[in-house]
Amino acid sequence: MARGAPHPPKVMGVADLALFYIVTGVSLRWIATAAAMGPSAVLVWIGALVGFYLPLVLAIVELSSRYPQEGGLYVWTRQAFGPFIGFMAGWSYFTSNLPYFPSVFYFDAGNALFIGGDRWMHLHDSPLYYMGFSLVALAFITGINVIGLRFGKWMHNIGALGMWLPALAVIVMGGLAWWRFGPATTFTPQTMIPTFDLTHMVAWGSIAFALSGAETASFLGDEIKNPRRTIPRALPIAGAVIVASYVLGTVAVLLAMPASEVNTLQGLIQAGAVAAGRLGAGWIVVPLAVLITLGNIGAASGFLTAAARIPFAVGIDRMLPEAFARVHPRWGTPHIAILVQGGLGALFCVAGQAGTGVKGAYDVLVSMGIIAAFLPFALVFLALIRLQREPAGPEVTRLPGGSVTSTVVAMVGLCTTLFALAMACFPAPDEPAKALAVFKIFAMTAILLGTGALIYRLGRQRYAGAAT
Image (cartoon, rainbow, N blue to C red; front, side, top):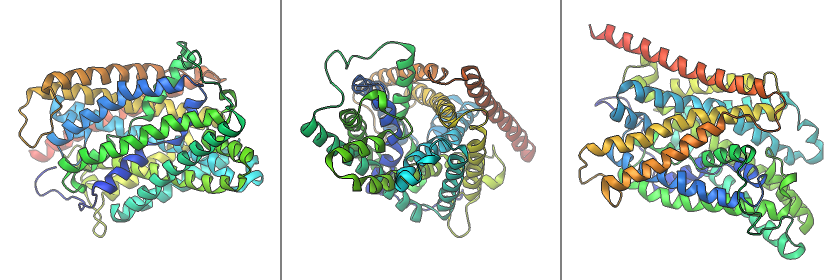
């Protein structure tokens, strides 16, 4: 960030940051997606951990210590490849959150139905209910973010509890149901071997995407207390919770119910309800639904917090109108960037639903989010390789083995990322309008990237005109 540029206050310590990583790193919807694959999902989680999550964490530790300022991957890729690539990486990540918001709120809306029990279940296939829930939740987190992290971090902290407490409860109940009644799913060496067909491989890309989130806090570099020390301390704490929640949560769902019965929009709470019913603890379903609802709202708030710092940093670099670089006179937040992101997210709540049902809209939004997010992840791994040529001072955290290790780590992460990108281009196997789904994925992605390139060109022209 330029000297003398406006910036929000530093408010996040190690505990706040670890909880922030948890709320953006654990998304309970992916437990349902994984459980629907059956026991082989356990090995897929391990593969995604080794092939994507660990390389991403290691890349972030080094890159965030090299360039700890506000902007995260936008700053890293700009430093490695120049302003245009940096802008497009930041823009792609920013726009990946636009389909993310309605997709996570669609999942959240499905889980929230369990709060009302049978009285609300008639809404499970109502597009109006899902869109309405998404728009209200998006307006709420936008308002929280405008007020700032002094208050918003409590939403993230509560959201983190709303992520791992339900996962822990389902893990315990799934274990008890298995002990008392036997497993609903049989785990054997044969059933745990992944199936190498297109249907399952498409889901693998989603599993890798589930383990993203470690990059989020780096966008808030100027709002973290001593980021060079705080980020490496918070990441291992959060990582242990994230991985345990995903792997054990998937196993617990499968112990409670067969994979063929798992609903990807309601899988975790669905398994919790089944296990609770068998154990005579049906009362726990409503608290679980409330926690899951809060957890997903907190996660969406965390991603909005992180992604809104990209247009803020780009505005300071004068590639966007000056308004994006302003901070609120009372709360010190990049309120223009936050409001614009909230408004664009609302448009996607409506556009993703067009011409399809609730699940079809959810699948299209998920695919768009994966593509738009994994493009900048690929550039992050390439940036880690490229920046090895730059000298590293004593304040920089290097990986053991120096540039050789960093390059190998980056190549592993890059290969996994490219695989996930390819798989995200395929529609869900049960999507009836496959051609329409593919068209919407590619058309909306192309529009987003093309809009970014146009905005960059206009920004350069504006900047050149102001300099003359």
